[in-house]
Length: 220
Image (cartoon, rainbow, N blue to C red):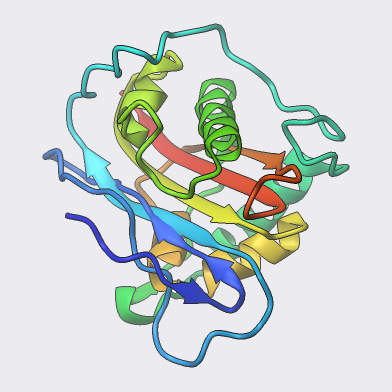
């Protein structure tokens, strides 16, 4: 099921998918409830939880070897301490538990591990959104998050995807995601065990200055 992407606190949010026994069709998600959007610019997105046998990868999305995302590179929007800061923030929220608004309250969850194939899938989608100047869970070739994760060589039992655009730092994008029920629920989902995140800077022709993708998953 798809949800409408809305502006929230100068961010575009959309939540992806994750689940426990059965593949749930999930795509773009809503960005948050209530309140007038603040004037600043920036989007975010998630996909709700999805589970089951991985779908076949999109024909135009060939598998490639895992990619690491080193701090200060194009794949990190030139941000220093990228992986360490994101892991610290995500795992701090998971350790504390969180209230995710309409998605409910979440008990503390175990820490996530950084995973290279998930990072590659995240980078591929951020690159795709930047080069095509779009903001969606659906890739320019029609691929879903699950297909991109599979194409990157990751065999999943459950996955979720959060995307965002316009945020200038790891702390800003995490605040945007945690303030949106769907994104917050993906981050707090105790099913997930691993994570990969990438950020690609926009250029002069892009709507947003940054394009973020977070992939969360449980391996088979």
